[in-house]
Image (cartoon, rainbow, N blue to C red; front, side, top):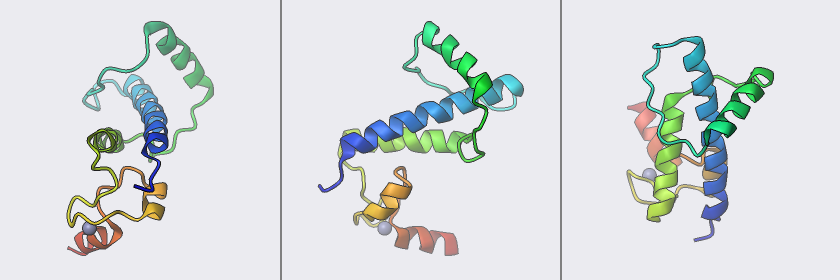
Length: 120
Ligand SMILES: [Zn+2]
């Protein structure tokens, strides 16, 4: 496989952490508005406190990042890397293009299937 999945996995983990922090911030601002489904975070209490302090200075999250579906998609992508099925279209089984994966590492479908689905 030409894909450097170890690197992609690392990028996904970093992205996941960022999204999780954004969601956490959102939860604090709007308690109860979004179901809390955060799993075990790789943060101990000390780091979590540091992170929340940092958040006050870095509220520059885009809407794209404050997205639970994205978080789930990233988790799923990491799981697929661990299973060895990463980079394969879930619909047709063909490889998802590397360019597409570079742009959207958590993509589950090749561009053809995605387009077909969007057209209905
Ligand atoms: Zn496909």
